[in-house]
Image (cartoon, rainbow, N blue to C red):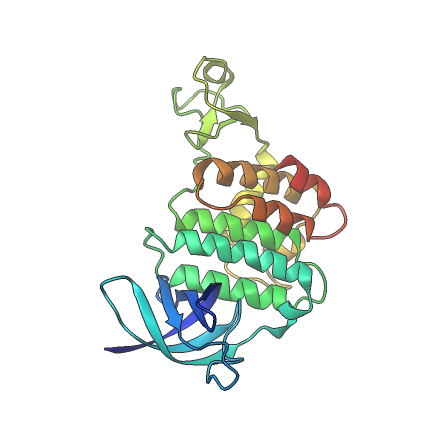
Length: 265
């Protein structure tokens, strides 16, 4: 049976001397894997039709027994050519694609994940310089939402509602702990988290769009860096299958002032 979808290229693997295996994020938010036979032959119809971070219209033969479908035809819709020359943007796109690859497996993301990745890739591909750090933070905050891993910023879950919450955050439970319970011998990792960081996280998570009119564009500096540090620790703890080293490389690509972010992550 022939199927058709719009999809974004997440990964490309060599398969024999002339063929590729391509992992896609389909428009319904599912991860799709296809073989592209003879992809690198000189007269292949697929030459120049797909590459990393392209959005394409894909026709393929569905195969159920091994999950690897066979590509029949591929037409680029949004090639995002600037990634071939803007290495900083490409490094960030690689990290975003890695997160999307993970989020598309075992999570009911629907079209939200596809729209998130497409709009973020479009934004950083159109930016002349390094991607803004706030855009990086927004993508990670929204990915956690997609995966059902949104941190719980309510007051200490072990206290009565009237108890005063403090700034100690339990990475294991994904929630705040007061000083009394944070001092217990639970062995869970704790970090300090300011009210400003929590506020900024919610701003990023709820920001509906990117661009100059978006709240995301108005944030920069130490507050965003603190949020990125928190997101890195949270992702490292709760998304263990994601290659976290790619995040450090992407953070360094943000430009001057980002080296410390990668070192602390």
